[in-house]
Image 1: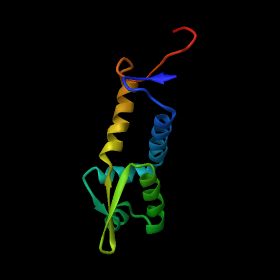
Image 2: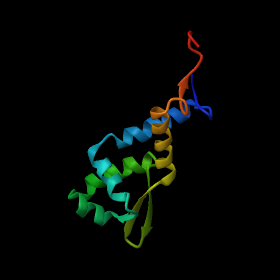
Image 3: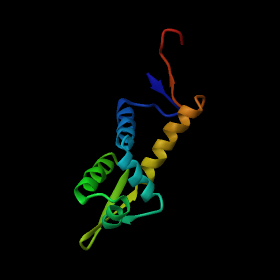
Length: 112
């Protein structure tokens, strides 16, 4: 079983895996990079990434379903932004990997 300062559940692990799965695509990483500077209109993302709207929509949906981005409608345009809570969650997981004493560890193994 994995534990840290707070108990890690199967749901937590599934959520974390979903976040990393959503980031495991070059186009989605480019979208995240573009949104680091703040909220952007879908039309600006289409122009910046030089991609079709339908292809971009697929990737935006993947990021949104994973909880990495949020959206809001203003008139006929949709604006996207990074979800700060999801970014903090990724940083916590990566911090735990980098510093094993502060993060996740295996317990309940035969040699513990």
